[in-house]
Structures are given as C-alpha cells and as structure tokens.
Length: 283
Image (cartoon, one colour):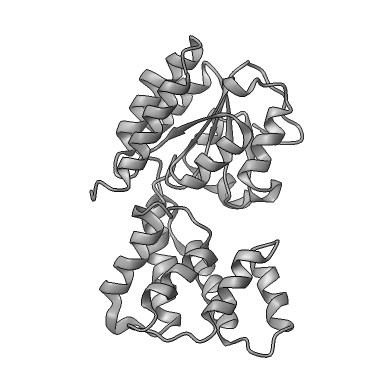
C-alpha cells in the first residue's frame, strides 16, 4: 500500500473507496455516540434526547445530506430547531461563515473566534467539534467493523483492478481502522483529508495515467457522487440500509461490466436512480 505521492498504477482500471458508511459500518455509531450526543450535551437538550437524536440522524444518515461536513450539518440542525427547542441569534452569521470560509476546519474556526466580538455560537460549535473528536477516539475498534463480506469482496476486487482509498477521514484514523481489520492488505493507494478533498485526490489519481472511463468512485453519500462527476469518472453507490446488497452488486455486476468495457451512461443512470431512491424509501 502506497501514499498518493508514491503510488504508480499497476492495472488499467482503478476502484476508489470511501471509508465510513461504504467499507466500515461506522456512520451510525459515530453519529449516535459522538456527533449527536455531543450536540445534545453542548446545547443542553437532554430532556429532548430521543427527538433531537432522531433529527440529527435523519440529517446525517438517512437524508440526501448524508456525509455532509459536520459544521454544515450543525447549521441544518440549528435551523430545524430554531423557534422550537432553541433560539440562536447568531445562526445566520455562523451559517455565512460556514458557507464562505475557504477552510472549514477547527483551526479556521479558532481563528474566526479570535477575531470576533460576538462569538458565543462560534465557541459552542468549536467545543462541540472537539468533544465529538474525543468521543470518536473512545469507540472500540470492533464497534465500527467492515460490512459483512467486505474483506473478501475487497480482496476479490483487488485481484482484477487497482484499489485506492479516497476518504475525508484523517490519515491516522484510516490507517488504524483499516489495519485492524486487515483491509489495507487489499489496498494499493491510500488518500485521506491530509491529501485534500475527495475531488482533488481523484484528480491526482487520474494523473497516474488512468483513462476516466476506467475509474470508479465507490461511496455512500452525494459528496462521493459529486467528486466523481467533477472528475468525469464513474460512481458506484453503496446504498444506505442496503450495504451488503450493494457490495454484492459491485462484485457480481459492476466489476464484470467495467472489465468488459460495458460500464456506460445507461448503467450509471440506473445506479444513480437507485441511489436517490434509497434516501426516500424510509427504511
């Protein structure tokens, strides 16, 4: 397994995989035990725990906003609670910052706080972000395993094509989690948030010599689809609530199609429709 700078292609076809919610069954546990729980604690909503947790999980797991950046998810959540359980005077100001800052990170938020007089919401957001990071670090590794059958299926994919990780998680987390389950043995190249956005990483991988019609981005969120489209490569969805079924389809249908040169726009459109439908199925 190589980093982006060292990696050289071995085969003509490349499959790129997101991590959480695509390979690892980690989305639910991280949002319920970390993101959502820390939001409830920071905003003092324990008396409305079930209602608030349900809203948080809908936004981050089961709606088309699945996989959205944590601060953008926070804005949506505060908007939905405004005038009901919360009143947040700074919300529009914070929303503007989230939507316009060139670097949406804890460090950039710290800089913004240092330069602001009215900073209550900004400070709460930062405390929440750091708190959820601490909670994520406490999750036992075996509580965020690969989906059933994924190690074997990933190995089968790598027998035919190059395999890369294209994830917005940090390098240390990916390395630790994938190594724990023996998944890095089936990976040729690892990229992470340390290398840049998913779109940027795909663009850099294309420079290794792959034709765009021989690269597939595999992911579970619309951000993965957008990164694929921005680079003109194919997108294969791991559908929420149908992850095992999606992996079976990838191995039995998508992989043979691209090996035979039959992965085309008609097939992509059918995949996109099934992906969109999965967010409206309600379970």
